[in-house]
Length: 222
Ligand code: PGA
Image 1 (cartoon, rainbow, N blue to C red):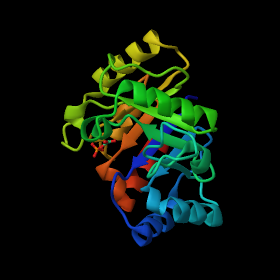
Image 2: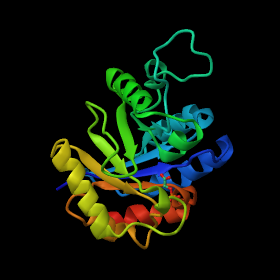
Image 3: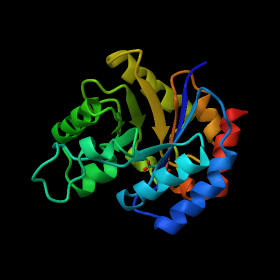
């Protein structure tokens, strides 16, 4: 059976108490299934408390970040290096289109961040907006997220997402896993993850609501 990733991207939302409330609701309801990998990516400010709550509750939830530094530890004011973040996270989103647009992140910077993650035991989940955006060397988990589908309620079709995922695998390696992101919710997630080349979903707005996120996990596990 293929792995299925369900990754919650909270973006710049939820204070610590809201984050802990979500964990206490979602944690006990995650279906326990070996091939199901559920990840929550809070803001940096909530990471430590979220990690603690998941450990104490023994929930089948992994913790991820939404970015990390292209540099190691040292004199890089304001940056969060992989070498320190790996105490808290097992995965990081990289190269999201909101970072490429708002922070002028280049493919080169994203490749550096990917190397930092890989060198520090963190799985890089690199977002590409189409099959032409390069997947950095060593990256084994890719999110196909067309910009027009993000936060618009207008997702790509499962069939087209499957075609793009297949092209990415053909171009790089069959061992790459590709998740889809962009207006995913409990009503469309099943059709997406049923596609042969799609290994899960990256969920933004629909992940903020605990009940909706639980529904997404349950629909996928059925
Ligand atoms: P959305 O965001 O689910 O709100 O469309 C997805 C993402 O940006 O990762």
